[in-house]
Length: 585
Image (cartoon, rainbow, N blue to C red; front, side, top):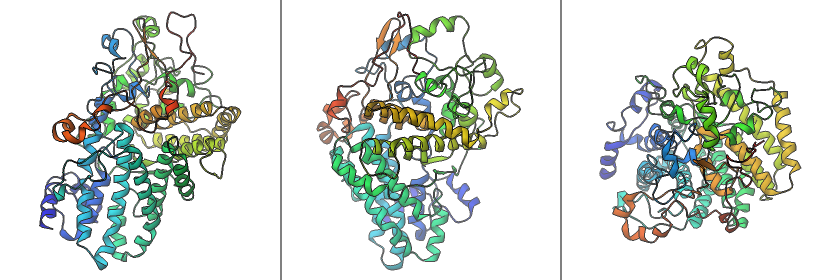
C-alpha cells in the first residue's frame, strides 16, 4: 500500500464533493495527494477526465491538422491546396514519411501512460473486503470500460498491441509481448459484456453514502449505471461490427445481445475545465488546435457536395439541414468545398478566390473566404462537450448491422439511416446554440447565417426520408456502405477525425478524391500508424515479432482479404486535363 500511495502522490487527482473545489483541484493534478479513503474514486475520475480520451487534446489537433496528417489523408479537413505548396509533391510517399505525417499523435504510448490508474485500482481492490470493497469495486469496473475502449482504439490504429500483460508496472513488469489483435478484440468484447451484465448488481450493493460519492465523482454520467451499461453495449455494437468481416459468427452473438440495451440519448458531458487565462479558444483543448490551424480546416468536396446537393447556395428542404451549422458560408454567401485536385483549383486561386487564414475575425472571413471552413462558431469558439457516444453514431452502426444481416434489428437499415440524420441534426444545432461567439461580430444577415434557425422537425424528417429512399433503392451492399459512411463523415467530421480515419481504412468508404499535383495523380493507401521509436529502443525483443507490420501500408486485421485489394479512392476520378471534373453528387 505504501508503494501505491507514493505513486499516487506523484500524479493522482481526487475530486471532493464541492464543485468549486473540484474545479480548483483539477488544475493541479501533479501536486495533489488525495486522502487514503478516497483513492478509488479519484483514480477513476482522473482516468475519465484526462486529455486525449474523451476530452480532445490541443497538441494532437495542432500537429495532425497540418495538411499532412490523418484528417487530410482521409479528407475530413484540408488546406485550400494549389501547386504553391511545393511539399505536396511527396503526398504519395508512404516510405520515407515525406508525405503522410503522424507527428504529435502517439496514442500507442499515451494509452499506457494515461491508463496506469487502472493497474493501481486493481492493486487497491486486492487489499479491500466487505463494505469497503462493495463501495469501491464499481470504480474499477468503470475504469475498465475506459481501458477497454482505449485498447480497441489502439488496435484500430496500430494492429498488434501489448494487452494481456500490460499495466503491471506496480509489479515491476514494464515491457510485455504484443498480442494477436483479433484475440484481443474478442477478449475485450467479452470483458465489456461481463461488466455490462454485472454493473447493476455491483451498484445495488453500494451504501447510500457511496452512491452519493459516485454521483459527484462521475463527471460524465453522474453515477447513472444504466447509462454506463448502455455505453458498454454501444462499444460492443461498434467494435463487433468492425470485427464482423473477420469473425461473423462471434460478432453476431455480441451484436444481438448488445442491441437489447443501447443509449437513449447522446452520451456527452461538459468539460470540467477551460483555461480562462488563455486568450485563445479552449486553452489546452482541441479548440485551440483548430483555432491555430484554421487554414487547414476547409471542408473537402467529399463532405461538402453530399450536404450541398443542388446549388452552391443553401436551400432549405433540398440541402442537408446540418450544412449551416457545420460549415461557414463563403464571401459569396454560399457553400463551396475544396478539392484534392490541386491543379484544378489553381486558376480560381490566382484569379482572386483566396481566403482569410485565421479563426479570429468573422468580418475578414466574410469578406475574403472563397471556400467554406468548418464553422468556427459551432466548433472553435465554443465549449464543445466531451463525447463518449452519440445517437447518430449508434444509428449508423445499427444501419450497417442491419444491412449486413448481423442481427435481427427492430428497424430496417434505411430507418436507422433516417434516425441518424435526425439525431445528428439535433446534435449539431444544439451545439451551435451553445456558442455565444458570432452574434454582433458582423452585420446582419451574416450573423443569422452563423447562428441559423433550426428547420422544423418536418423539414428535417423530409430530408432524412430522401436519403433513406436513396439508401433503400440501392441493392448492392457497397452502395449502401457508401451512404452510411458519408453520413458518418458528415456527423463526426472534425470532432472525431481519427475515428473516420479508421472507418475509411476498414470499409473503403466513402470513396475520396485522388490528389492531383503538378500533373501527377496520387492515391496513397495509408493503412495504419507506425509504432513509436521507443518500442524499438525499450521493448526490442517483443517488437521484433511485429516489426514486419511496422509501416504505413500493412492493413489492420479487420480489413478483409477482398478489401485489401480495394482502393478507397474514386474509380471514376477524372484528372485536371479532362473535359469534366467529378461532381460527387
